[in-house]
Amino acid sequence: MASRKKKLQGLVAATITPMTEHGEINFSVIGQYVDYLVEEQGVKNIFVNGTTGEGLSLSVSERRQVAEEWMTKGRNKLDQVVIHVGALSLKESQELARHAAEIGADGIAVIAPFFLKPWNKDVLINFLKEVAAAAPALPFYYYHIPALTGVKIRAEELLDGIQEKIPTFQGLKFSDTDLLDFGQCVDQNRERQFAFLFGVDEQLLSALVMGATGAVGSTYNYLGKKTNQMLEAFERKDFSSALNHQFCIQRFINFVLKLGFGVSQTKAIMTLVSGIPMGPPRPPLQRASREFIDEAKARLESLDFLSSTDLKDGNLESCS
Ligand SMILES: CC(=O)N[C@@H]([C@@H](O)[C@H](O)[C@H](O)CO)[C@@H](O)CC(=O)C(=O)O
Image (cartoon, rainbow, N blue to C red; front, side, top):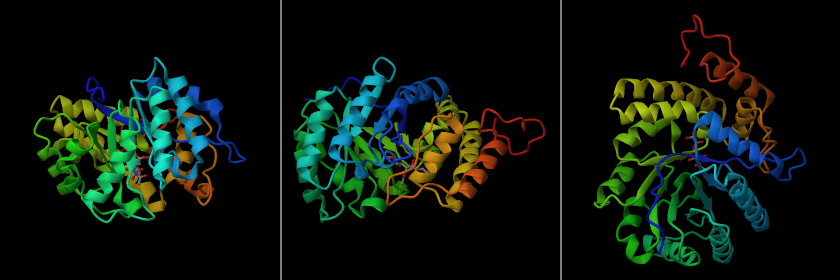
């Protein structure tokens, strides 16, 4: 039976997988990365090998090593480490789930298989159930990201009666903008035992109103501190401040989305803000362009999201 002690709350950074210039995993910076998240961003939960971590572009052996490194370096520093173990092959997913349990992870998450796809809720649940059963002591999260998987089964439908099928089910990572679906997931959870982790960083405040218990996202790697200020304002019911924080965050995300934003750009921005080299993404992704990096840097500075900036005085856009 999964431990119900620690409900996953607050911000969860969807970790980047650092790579060398030759495209190999750069394990040597993960210790520094943990310290940066905890000390500079106030983020103590991580989601490893997900979309941002290029989990599906890594081999099973690499995924195991990455998970191990985060567990080792995060020991006594991080609160919770959730490992994404979704794969097209059920066998691989089960292997990764067993491995996550062996190394002491706090939970596992799984996306819907996206090549030969489940065509209805029951078929999807059967797949998830088989993975969850490989790690029967670990909390299980379903990772709903329909825009990337192409599996459009509503989360609200999936959750209906899920615990009878998957006793370790502990929550949902909801990376979609359908707040009706999200709200109905929260609404049906009468006993409030599940974690509802929202995954669209630029809309988090709306999801908090709808009952999100936390958030998993790429921007919490470098905007964790800002987003924590929003969570704190929301907690003390200072909705006007919370909205100001969300608008500030939106100004940045909206800007980069218009330039073209994804995992490659996240790697470049994190390198810029943290000073820790994240390296290039793995093909077919291509590294972010010089123009993107320059424009993103200027925007970060104008919003006062880069600590080195001197623009505070008289800067109308400043979000400090
Ligand atoms: C499609 C995508 O990558 N979405 C991101 C968001 O954090 C996203 O980068 C952010 O909201 C900006 O649009 C996360 O939901 C992904 C995530 O949590 C993960 O890496 O597993």
